[in-house]
Image 1 (cartoon, rainbow, N blue to C red):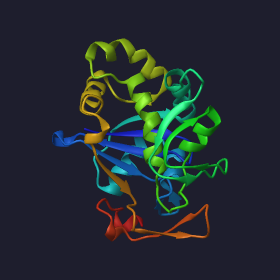
Image 2 (cartoon, helix red, strand yellow; image 1 turned 30 degrees about the vertical axis):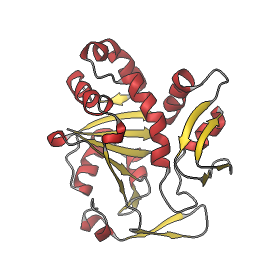
Image 3 (cartoon, rainbow, N blue to C red; image 1 turned 90 degrees about the vertical axis):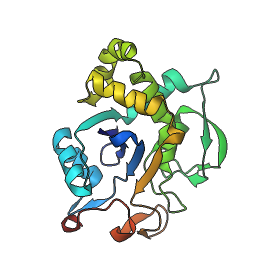
Length: 232
């Protein structure tokens, strides 16, 4: 089963493909700025229905994606407020690498951080970092873990109990069996055991301008997961 988790922020949405085929857990990050003909991946998400967008992703990258779970960025921030803040109203994170946030101009050093709610939003907003990397995927995973714990539990009884919550706060075509498989496949085993791939991969793309950068040319031959040639 391949399920596309979408962190919905309009054209800046990010895409996390959870691949459970053959029992091999894999997580693939797709950047919203990948150009597909005259549009970016993020723009296509805004323009199309979820079902049509699944078809586009499947055709474009040679996948077999039919299941999706869409959560808005505002819902993710609400999950932080509800379940992630400590008594002082801050969110504790372990920032994997230093970066400057485009949204607020603040520098976030590497290591443990205690962030207020405004700092959290800038911390997880899509951008190309000043080192030219897509570190935001790793930063967003801190929030996605909270969402998964809130919405998906690796127990059928819990999923049955929370099915109303899932349908209220998300757009999804996952049934209870799908959520159980996703929950047991990822939540039970932990994110550390998941093989992660980012598209486009580091070293395969060029940047244009100065920070904040724009994405330049992508050498798809340097990517394990490639965009279909006629769509480049």
